[in-house]
Length: 178
Image (cartoon, helix red, strand yellow):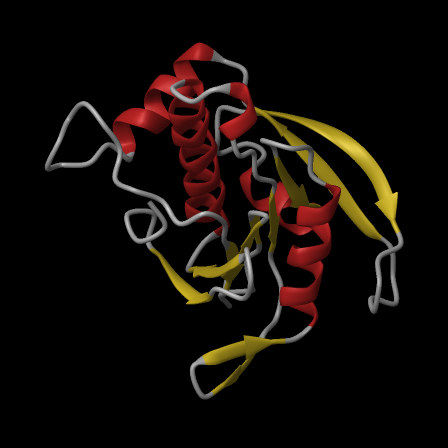
């Protein structure tokens, strides 16, 4: 789903995935699709076997070194993921500013949060995706072309960065594209 959303998995440390997207729109749409697919798959399992993930998305600068990425953009995405609800998606104010009028979702301001290793408070928004039409659209956009009845297998968790960054634990973030 990350690849279908114009993203790439940069790293998969532990039970997380760090992904990078070229736009905040792609990162948010991918996050919604991932959470919707996970919800459908979890409903097939007994309650004690279900896995819920959190996704955090940030738009910020990153440092490329070899095949890895570093910097505050990555760290903020990971911290936002930690603030997200289980099964939910949270985004930074910078992502909110880029997507609020372009995507058919609701947003709930969660306030400013002082997070580890970041000097200034981070403003966080919760994505509200409980609209049936939005869920159907996300599932249609990311359905596997090989099997129209099911989505492709997903990694357990992911962090995604832009260039947009996304972090799955799942968390998502983005970095500035210029």
